[in-house]
Length: 467
Ligand code: UD1
Ligand code: MG
Image (cartoon, rainbow, N blue to C red; front, side):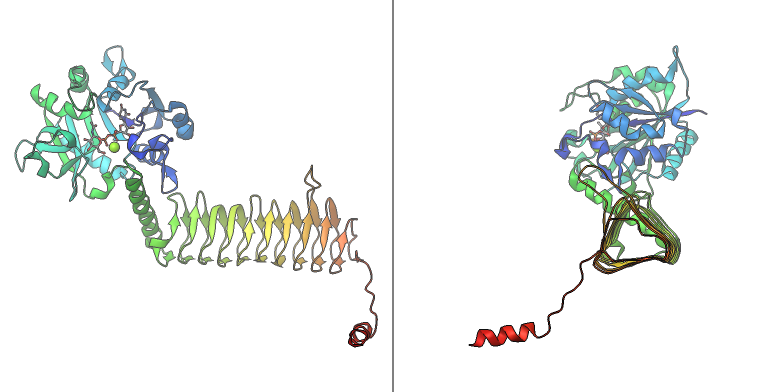
């Protein structure tokens, strides 16, 4: 039995009132379509997945190009049935189908789990059906197509009726069509040309295949999803946000099941792609985004935001830090209020403290920059100490220049290091220095004017002002 998977993704998403194509709106940190493709690739290889694109086709194709799926362009979006009509030629070799069955997924139903699609597929095969519809019973079925069964407890379906076409008697039906189906390709191919546009939107509805196939003597059945949440569609931004919360909660629950402590998971924002090891602790209002990976025993305190950050084991990220495209090795301590910009590499047991900003900077093992520093395009050797208020002057208005600080260097507070510059191992920089020349190993560099102290000057001034 061979299966192809179609993913409907050509529509504009008019109800979102957005200029971006619906399937590129994100939930759980990834475009809707990417979630559906990820589920599909658990069943078949990408070369058997056909994404039907149309509205902003190039943007949609570019966004998911890395998945290696096939595309079919539906130039005019004339309905879900029309979309499958455009696809069918790609599934044929001459007039012979290259597959036995077609699974149809919807690009705007992102919570669907592969296990559920497998249940649909197996039920479809066991029932020897021409069409099998995945359904759910919803308390509020507003907006969805409803499934009309042939008899109350029958697996067999008579028709799908779209919300706007419901008769008053049908409006109480609460078993909805998920927009996810299995078809046997031969009967689908034989009858799909019979679809008509006699509906409020004057579109070819794929849903009408149910009644058409039944009229042709074919078997159409339905199977309810075990969890209705999985088949919720994202047609409005409100629905989009409900799905986003649901997906993030699902991610948090998976992490908790794997031994991660998440206080107040409802307040955290964790993308589906994030990995966290057991015994890590995530405090309220933390955001873990993109390809972030967090090691065991690491603690991330409230209001910190990590995007594409690899964090080792036993790290402490204190409150309100912002980290992006950075790595933090085991045992390091960050923050509070630290900003690690792209290309920051914080070594083992290193410390980056209050109001410190780093960019394209490597901090060696045990190095410290604890207060109010800017380190850009810098390499700081092992066990060096960067004092409060130190600035690497990495930019001359045109170009960026590197700063190299050796091992066990002491950079006194409020120093400016004018790059390009190299400070040798074990050197000392006196506080308040402007360093413009390289400093050899083990030297002391003082780059400031000498202090003048005038005894009794202030006292005399006060006395003079009294008279
Ligand atoms: C559809 C079903 C409805 C079901 C609901 C479940 C139809 C007619 N109705 O309604 O029974 O309850 O899904 O979520 O199918 N698309 C195309 N080309 C088109 C039109 C749509 O590719 O010409 C794509 C859209 O991008 C979307 C999917 O098909 O990903 C579903 O279209 P949408 O307009 O959201 O249909 P619903 O009104 O939600
Ligand atoms: Mg929809």
